[in-house]
Length: 212
Ligand code: DC
Image 1 (cartoon, protein in one colour):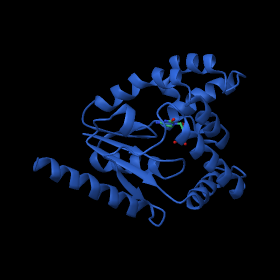
Image 2: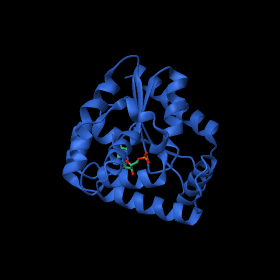
Image 3: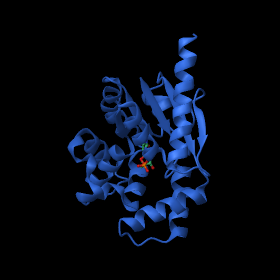
Image 4: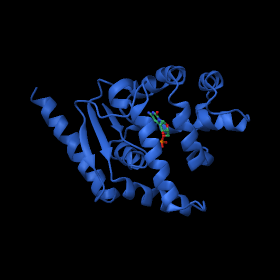
C-alpha cells in the first residue's frame, strides 16, 4: 500500500507521515529532505541555489545517507530548497529514487508537494493536509526555538506565505491537491487527533476497496 501525503510548508504532513507509517509498519520518506539536501549541497559548496545547472548536478550526486542531517531542518535551507525544487531537471533527477522507495514492500508513506499528483498518481490513499498559515507559523516557530534557533514569528509567517506562493505557482509539479485526495485540515487538531483523522481516511479507503 502507498499512502501519499501532500501539503504546504509546516502543515504537519511530515509528523503525520511519520506517525502513520509507524502505525501501519510502513516505510516513511519525507521528500522535503531530498530537496533540502540538494539545497544544502549547493550552499556548502558556496554556490547560489538559483544556479540551475549546479542544482541539477547536485541532485544527480545526492547521497541518501545524509538525509538525516539536522542542519537540513533550518529555515534558510527550507527557503533554498523551495528555489531548487522549482527546476524541472532537479525534480526529474529525484523521481526514480522516490518511486523506487514507494514501490518496496511492505508499503510506504511519502510526504511532500507532488506525491499524489506526480510521484505516485496511483497511490492507494492520498491525503492533502492543510492548516491556517498563522497556526503553521506558530508551530514552526516553537519547533525552531526548541532547536535553539532564534526566530521571529512574523518573519516565519512571511516565509511560509512566500514559500506557499512559490510552491503553488511554479510551472512544474506545483503544490495542489490531487482530484482524488482527501483534504485534512488540522488547524484545530493536535498531532494525535490529526493522526486519528488520517487513520480513519485510510481505513475507509480499505473498506471501499473491498467493495469495489
Ligand atoms: O516540506 P519541506 O518544507 O521540507 O520542503 C522544502 C521545500 O522542498 C518546499 O518548499 C518545496 C520543496 N518540495 C517539493 O518541491 N516537492 C516535494 N515533494 C517536497 C518538497
